[in-house]
Amino acid sequence: MKRILVVTAHPDDEVGGFGGSLLKYRAQGVETYVICLTAGEAATHRGHATNDQELAEQRRGEFAAACNVLKISRGWVLDYKDGALDRENSYRVVGDLVKRIREIRPQVILTFGPDGGATGHPDHSMASVYATLAFHWAGRTNRFADQFWTELKEHRAQKLYYQTTSVLLPDRQPVSPAPVSCEIDVAGYVEEKLRAFRQHHSQQPLFETFEGYLRKRPEVELFQLAASSQLQNCAMETDLFEGIKE
Image 1 (spheres, rainbow, N blue to C red):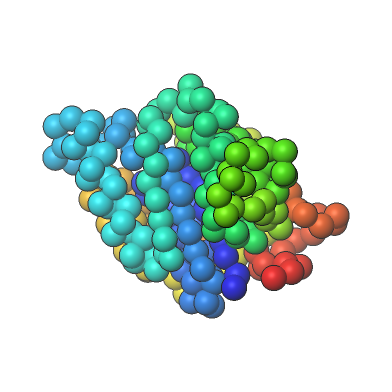
Image 2 (cartoon, one colour):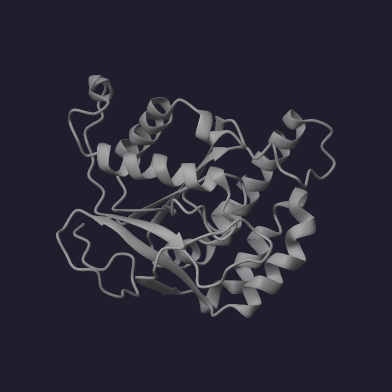
């Protein structure tokens, strides 16, 4: 069984740069998983929430609804602090991700690049750092060996991709996106991707901006191959599973 794991920082990240690909591969029978590191309780847009706890609960529900639209096999929202992923205990976060990688056993892992995506959000950058370390360490017997006291075994995912972009947003901190090495045609999934984003009701002020941005772009999602278990030269791909051995 083919499996994809996406590691993000906030509820709604699973849609923006990944939603079309998740829909496309799920339609092909691929198992899809999303780990969101925070509940997004520090968001600027807060819906009707009167405090961080209320917003976190609301955004967890929105994430679940969006995952339902995206037909995700399973999604998790973890309890790390929104807006402070750069101040978390990195060993703890990476260990958490390593454990889940060893449980899910994906062939492909997707996350942000260390640039932080089009918005340059620091939490996106840290999600990239943590996911990258977890990608490499999950396959090593000398990392988090205490996890082997249960039935877990090491797991070496075959490909790590960073989400990237061909469009820069104005009025943001400077971003230097990774070069594109993989284009996924998601033309048939744009409307469902928009519907998934609209499940994040607390972020309603962003709906018009998101839709306008999405409709101006080519109907593709862009990635860079960041690491591979097979020695290879970088070449343009149109399939995240190209060269994958099941």
